[in-house]
Image (cartoon, rainbow, N blue to C red; front, side, top):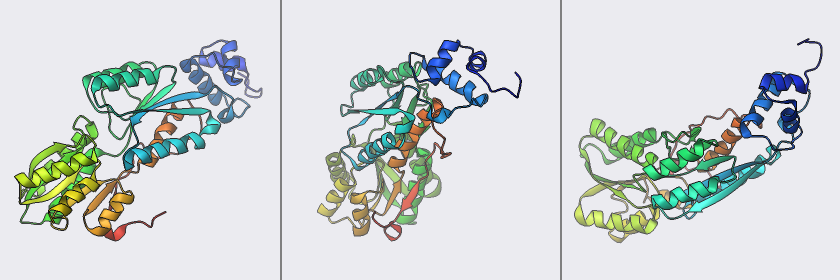
Length: 343
């Protein structure tokens, strides 16, 4: 090709291995082109530096299906807010985010929700736990469209990427804090997960235990419980734990429900005698830190995760300019003395 002449649609078609008509439909936003061919055309056009604003090319709208639990807890509410912001922020890139909530944790039900949400979608973002039926449902979707997992990974599902914290790292940090806060004398500790089927929850639990075994052997994890992400359940689990272990020294709450734990501790007047480490900084956990019912909070910025997940989908389709932010979001550690100002 002569370097002095401008590249043409014929050049793009040749490089992308498609017809002239396909290139014309993509670059003029007329639709009717498969996702794979559209990506090939846009990639070829960029390589040839074709003379048009490809970042603003009027391509068809991308429909992103988002499957997540209902925003009944601060974490999922922040995640939902992040998706709403992403919709507004990336509107010029022609992306439509459609959220499907689920509250039934039965694997058959969740697998059905995933399959239905994927219909007519160009991509999927999912927050889901690991179960053969759920992984199979996500795998089926991932064979046709890109899938991004958020908060908890499904590494064997064929997903495009995982956006979230290093959950093993989070568990190790919690173990280090618990061991140091309890001190050399040690004592009994319980772990409350939302659902161990969430890979992220299981990774946090395992890493937490490993640090205590290796670094603080006087600390003994006597139980690992499941709240099913329900605040009332964490209260009951805490009360039951103290009935069984009256000398309990620490609680690591992997998921939601810090308020329930605080209510149980206040009822037995152990709110200042029990080390409690939780996740997600929000209005409730902030207040519990100030009151001394919580000793430390590990925050993973669900708001940022939501925006980053949508950005990954756009990057897959060569839309927009990448922010360069990592897929692995940082972990922030908050104590009462370093709480940021309320915004």
